Length: 489
Ligand SMILES: Cc1ncc(COP(=O)(O)O)c(C=O)c1O
Image (cartoon, protein in one colour):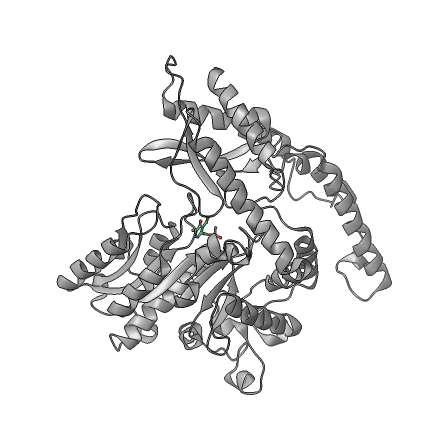
């Protein structure tokens, strides 16, 4: 590649080279997808040997064609393939084809979403997408707002930051943005279930409140926050002079996909004057299923919602949004800089999205939602989400009714946590058996499933985000698990 072909410009030779390298790359990627397995099986040591470099920065560049050739040989075949129906380990999805096209567009044009002059049409698209998303989740589009973020962790941090500042401003009459934390900050309390995502504690730490501010509310058998216990804990804290400020519900817990009872939590939050945040990083996709949308009823009651598009919505990493019922709360994140987001811009109708974002330079991820939502429409999306939910229901029934497995809870979304029971004559413990089976699936069968702990014991997990998974595939996997149970290392 000559110096002339640095970028895609209006130059005819740059345009030709752009097309050539992308076509060649697309061909190499497509050619690498010859196996239905999720993974080729290499161990960490084997991978280290394969990818070891002579030097990352050679004296003279090797040229794109040579580098692509090496990448195609060493890296492409060893990628984890989330689009394989043998991949069901995490809340980590394959990427829809149209959203890969969107990634190409947004990387090529490399817009930065902080100020209008760095992303004119992209800013207007994000504003429009956010408006439609607010409507989808039941917010009043005139009063609500939102912003795209790097993922569920950042969306949660953003929601909880707004909750903290809203509480300090409106209840303590204290400007936390200006003065930092109030003197009695050690008394502030955030309530979330004992199985909520660890980004709750991380956020509390980053917000200066510390892990001790996070009160873990017990869950019921269905793995949902126990609303009665929540109320008891709030009362207990009030009685000893603590300052409850927020309830963070989980709409789709990481392991079980369980959904906290939003209407009941909303009543409690209203009663005690608390902010209600919904971590719907996982469960936000359920709203698109005609048949099961009612399972996430009550999201509109929450003051902030985390929506992750790189989980159930099958869009490439990263893609998430933080939606806020009352847009005035975004003031917390607004600070003006002469070089970037002048106050007069807003007055003249130029939107600078940095005013509501924790990030400054930011990707145009909203394009992926814009393209994928319109490409498939309500019907296409409902089918995708419904298939995943019904696959989990099918798998659960099979495992639950088998004497060879133990299950934890009936899935509300698309994850099933279970445990393979050891054969009575075996000396291998249940924990060892389940760990061994997972490793064997990964390295010998190219099948990647999840592992977690429930009630002190190792459990396995199928996270069924891929609508290409069939009941036959699930039956085969159950058979394979049973076969592996009887095989020794
Ligand atoms: C319930 C829940 N919330 C938040 C997150 C964090 O999302 P991200 O990985 O996009 O930061 C996860 C991740 O799995 C999750 O399961």
